[in-house]
Image (tube, rainbow, N blue to C red; front, top):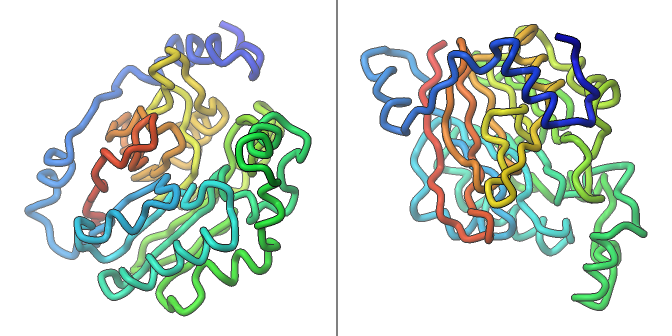
Length: 287
């Protein structure tokens, strides 16, 4: 069976299914995820959240304790300086709770994208119509955005297409997803986005992306459409084979899945209506 055009997501999903990429896919509960590791020693506890969209502070009281907190992007809504500063306050408030904090950007955090999205696009027109001004009047530069994010939080690191080793675990973080409206970190399906994934090292233990792989935690359920990235799925299954892949972006397909030797975690906190209805996902990494 020949591979369909990268732009035909439905046919790509059928192709992935025919190739057996979902044959062993199963859904796990939070309890199952933790119970499998209870009898081991030397664990590193990871707490996963994503897509907090200016509501991260609502999580503070109920954030589970752990060694490392990871956030898979979309901590703002329109990437204004005020929003980034507010998220920085959240990071300061929780910084003593974790040994390390790892953050990547998402499509809403577009002030971190040096290219920035099309200022004449549909999202921009809607924003101007609703709020009466362009979000870019509130946006800091890329350099200032990065400085503000972890300012005063010594145990926080921001990853953008780069790796870091923490507590013996190799993380790689990337904010890209297939073109989604006209926000930040968009790449065309096929060769353009595969160029981003080609930068991921083979020895990555925990992969952080904003967007999901095709067919796993990527369904926009209210429309019955899958929007994940086939190039990312193939990269994970055929080359990297990380122990964990943590992402968000598609709020309503939150949850934990396992296929082959990789556990996939959609850690988006809100539902489709941006209500913070989901819980942080916790797992223990065995070094």
